[in-house]
Amino acid sequence: MDAPALASIIKQRQTWKVMASVDQPIVHSREQLHAGDQGLADAIATAGWAPFHYDRAADGIAEPWRVHVLNQDRCRTLAREFSSLFLDIKPTNKLPAMLSACGALALVTWLPQFSHGVGGGSDTGVEKEKRVQIDEEHVAAASAFVQNLLLLLTAEGLGSYWSSGGQFRSKEMFNHLQIPTDQRLLAAVFVDYTPESDAPERAAGKHRENRADAGRWSRWI
Image 1: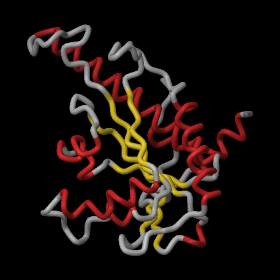
Image 2 (image 1 turned 120 degrees about the vertical axis):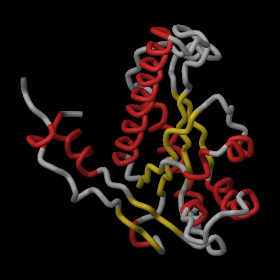
Image 3 (image 1 turned 90 degrees about the vertical axis):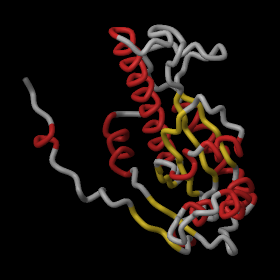
């Protein structure tokens, strides 16, 4: 891909929050689900070429990120279970509606250094500072993975919404989805398989038009 084509995809990428009623979720055809699932799987695999600095060395895996994918059936089930999992959920909570609309949900986590490698389990002196630095690099690497994923989904013609996660960050949800609790959620990426005209409720991200010229936040020294 040449630079202009890549620049076009970067500029085309847009945040869309797509929602539907839990009682009337969006229904995709078998063909839409197959194409969407394959596009998402391919995007995840390619996004994994994101750079990382430190070998996380967990379970024989160097990358500091992990991805847990919920297919559409699992998303719809979780939307119905939400109120029983979280009894204090507010009526304004959008997550059940988003689970009822998405084609799939990719939960991207990162693994803090903890007692692995440099820093040990110590919280004192240089060792703590070094461990914090390594964790910051792990988060940066996982964020590069997420950005790769969003751009690849855009190139596949799939919509996306990067959520910080809300209740998906909780220990209760991690246990419910059998995600190891030593991981930390970085992004809940809702993937939209629905043609724009078919979505019952679609809201654009808030900041697309709220961007400064690069000359205001960058400088050459």
